[in-house]
Length: 143
Image 1: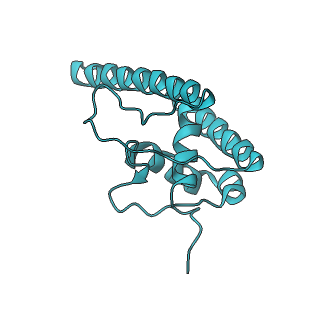
Image 2: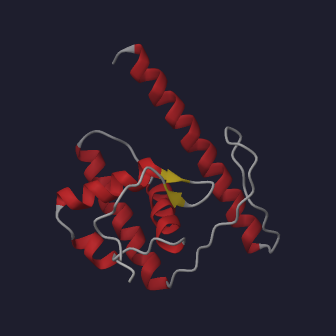
C-alpha cells in the first residue's frame, strides 16, 4: 500500500473510533434520560438531535442488512463495523428517507452494494441526511 492510502485508512479508522465512542455515550445518555446532542471532536459544533423511532421489526431488519453488508465487504478484504453500519442505516430510515427494508435485505448484490455504500459514504451524520443528491434504489417513494 502506498503512503497516501495508509494515511487515509488511518484517518478513517480514527473517525470510526470517535463515532463509536460518541454513539456509546449517546446511548448511555439517552437511556438515563439526560440526552444532549452529541458532537464528534472533528466536526463543527452544530447541535442536532436525530430521531430513532423504528419498530423492533425494523431494527431487526436493519441489523440483518448491516450484517449482509459487512459480509460483502469482507469478501473484498474491507473491514466495516456492523454496529456503525446499522446506525447509519437506521439514521437514514428514521430521519426522512424511509427504506423498503425487506427489499433492501433481499435485493440483488449490485443494488444492495449501491445503497449500502451510498449510505456509508454520503450520510451527513450531524444532520442525519444524505448529501450529494444520491438516489437510493430501496427508498420508499413518497407521493
